[in-house]
Image (cartoon, rainbow, N blue to C red; front, side):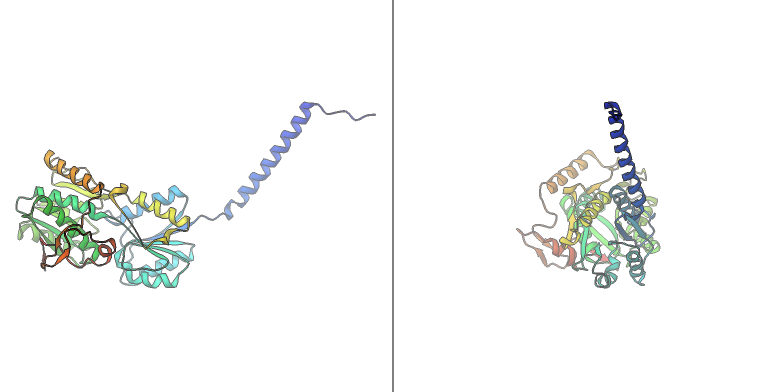
Length: 368
């Protein structure tokens, strides 16, 4: 008896069954091995609490958003002083848990960083401090000084006493760079105004910040206040005393006419770019990754209703100039000791701005 020939329908059913079994087997293999697929791991070390507004929370939120978007596991260690070795201990634990890149988000970690890049040559490091360099470490930062320049121009237009108070952490290159850019902005709109600086000696010390702000307002007659600290205590004091102020790193959203504006930066967008470089193996391809307003990473928060139309127009024009290529640190610049630091047709190089700004421009007074 001859075997019965299969119909086209039966052949189609058999072929469909074959593909179904093949797909099912592939799916079972994928899910059974999914646990063996390891995500890239990145670590971030913070000086303060990850939920502390000012410097720390925006860093954490930016990195978290970037890692979530790119499918990267994030390890976080906060409340790490840069003076007691806690930073180094935190990094060692992160590396043990698979971190291939670690971000050190404070200038205070410079000493630990110099040790860590030698201890873990296979790990890529990123640091906010340009004073720590290595084959496996890149300095990264946003050109916040561009925002400082704009807010200085605003302060120069707002002051009536021609005294502007500035509460600052310490006289390192980062802080001095901000003070200088701010003062150059002040001078652009009000050559008669001066900036009075008081250093606190640390990134966070609410008691000292409060005392300095009070002194600047009551004794020095400052009628505009700004600061370079991890917390907005200076703004809080200025608000209580009915004085205009300019925030830093966060939108204070006080709803007050004295809250003129804040310098903001889009850390999530920046961190996503940096993590992408790391995943491609190109993180430490350059010594410094420094970008700003031209990449839409620096901006001002909403201006107070007290800022006039004329003042807004000036700020728009100055921003337009910077986006067109005008440098903040260019042209003839003297320091507050009378020494010329920049020639009329010169631009101060990034390397110098990052590492060697150990001076303050003319128009800055420092109170002890």
